[in-house]
Image (cartoon, rainbow, N blue to C red; front, top):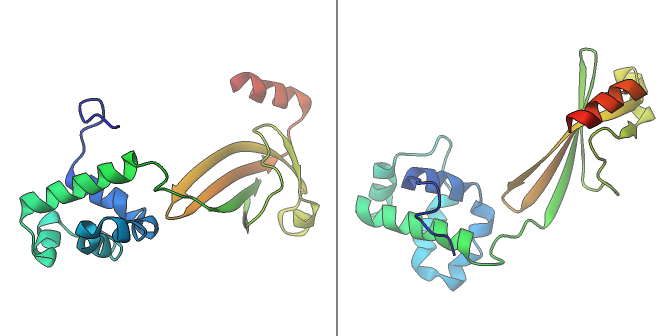
Length: 170
């Protein structure tokens, strides 16, 4: 259970924005928690940039105090209840760089995620990038809606000395 005294203090606006990043997953809560239904529907349609809390409270017909309480309770519920969040889809985004040429490739499957410092061969890119052998420089993961995005940043292949330096830096 999250202890509000041991977590970062957050505003209802921050919670609202963070919940909007999970809007796809919030829909599954409506059946189990119908008292949040109106708020969840609103969150799922929040435009960018998000409106002020005053606008949201007016749109929902709630007092500012009630809105703040509902948003914070929903945020805690999503983070505390096990198995609510499900990132069942995976997308791989490969970012290739050589000299001043950049190329991005999105994949829905990659048999194995390479590690930083690994050699990555993609000879089919030689025609547009100029090289086909790369080194993995960085890997990051993002969770949003129902998807995990694995971003793999690649650049020109390193020789053994450069690889050793990179491995020592890790």
